[in-house]
Image (cartoon, rainbow, N blue to C red; front, side):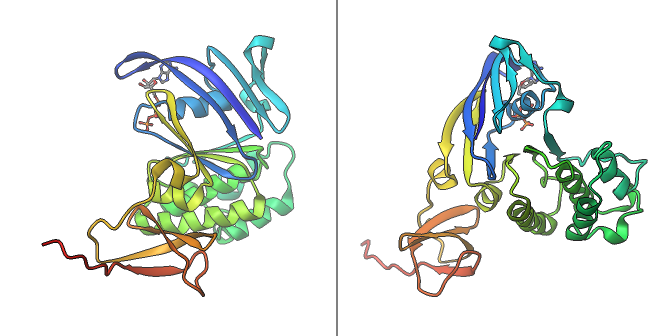
Length: 279
Ligand SMILES: Nc1ncnc2c1ncn2[C@@H]1O[C@H](COP(=O)(O)OP(=O)(O)OP(=O)(O)O)[C@@H](O)[C@H]1O
């Protein structure tokens, strides 16, 4: 379990307000951090990374205390085993793709892991290229590989896919899920995209004005959609449980009775054919 309990005064749009977060993140899972612009998401990530100091706080990751203001413990960023992936990639422009990965390892280069990450991200042929010659999707794959090569205890993903076009974004969502299955990392993912959160995260922390509003599974935080006048919708099954299935369609989650033969990941067409006399 990852325990986070912090408080910091921020200068928010409406005046000074405290960012107050008390949360437990499950290990080996992606937790989403969802909230409007200016609600304190990036500030929380920076506090976890040790880049911003909170007024009070306690952070423990895998039994290692990173921050305990009461007991004057405050590990510097380089001692916190964190991987950070930003929206704008933040790659070293003067280094090759492989150079970016090696630099992230500092002295302990795991040759096998570097090679493997280049293969799984489809970047082997680009290992000697500089970032400027890559597409946005490829740059973000480098950024992800560079974060993973450090075998982080916690991966902080600050809207990592939001600069990408829709097709590349959907593809990288699937790749991120595959990486998660393979490397079993724990991650906190900032995202504004509810569909992305349903796809990637097991749990969500929703914040606004620096305060936690809700914590739970995506369906608990965002609720289920009802048939809102649509006749046909294309969606994807995101979970099957207890004779029920959850289908994500058009950025909303529908809870429906399970239909024999379907599995998680299947694309389905929802057809709403209820006819009710209304007059
Ligand atoms: N070190 C700081 N001290 C005081 N206030 C800060 C500090 N850093 C950021 N703020 C303020 O805190 C508020 C929240 O900023 P933050 O970047 O955390 O929001 P966010 O939820 O990540 O927004 P966005 O989605 O737009 O990136 C902003 O109003 C910002 O000006």
